[in-house]
Length: 167
Image (tube, rainbow, N blue to C red; front, top):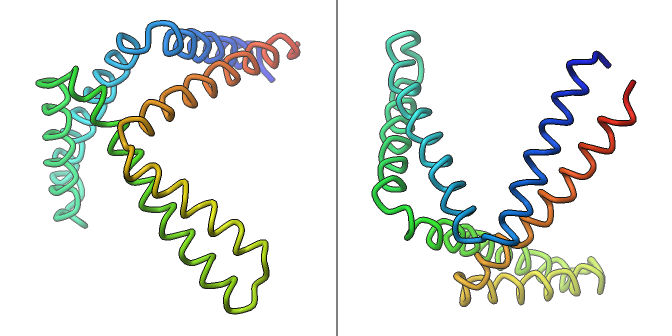
């Protein structure tokens, strides 16, 4: 590993650790900053999607659709940053809840068709968690933010440890 790679790993570890700690200690402010960065990212990606139509005309309809959605989502986050800090995690929790219900139902059906009690147990747990996320999307979004913060802290610590292990 090159010396510059070590510093990139160290920088990534520091950034992850800082954002993770900020999400734990200053949740609203850190989430607002993350949402603004996400909105900026969506806006810029939308512009690049639209510009790419002039470079490569293949799949221009999808590029146009993605560009308009990206710009619209970015502008929506910019115009409502406080609402976005609650709405985006809640929508993510709602989507995860829907997937949990679908996965749980599929596993339960499989269990009744002979896949065993393990599939049934997995299906029941997935179904319950999915329903909890659907009916408590705001609370689920808050839990997801805390889990994301924990993952950032762990990632930051590991990034720093591995950067110091490299010579």
